[in-house]
Length: 216
Image (tube, rainbow, N blue to C red; front, side):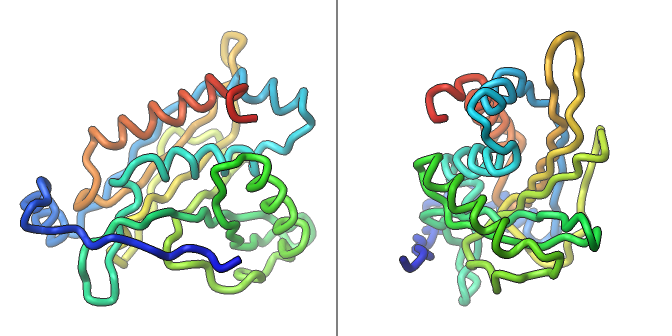
């Protein structure tokens, strides 16, 4: 099946953030936010169903990303601001032998188990420790990474390109007062995404974790 790379061009004459877009684009301004997500219920349900954590979290984050147009923005070959119809997650998997990671991608599906099975299959087939063993990812991508050995409280990346889609990172889980808490870093470009939109996104992520029985 050919993956979708469809998009719509944003009409800058009617785009309400036109001034903000141009201002922060010229500044090359990105920013990062780190929050804690309560995954107590989600982790318990995954354990009961014998499902792997990272493929499940990757679907959850992809679902939240695809629910917000501000997180699906990019530029086309003519530098027009666009909104992708769908974004596919690119994620990293460490090879235990080499201690290097592979950058993989799996086509997003709104059906959790369809994505989960495809993601697990990609990991088992391609995660050999080389950088892009599956080949180049699609243009309509966003990044998910995991540092399960680091309980960070803040994290950011230095990216030279004008990268609009989000960079998401989850850290080492912590047990606090009977809850499982996941540090979660979100990096976005201020040209297309304000704090309000990040707040909406974080709420979507937490809601999906709180109501995981609706999609598992």
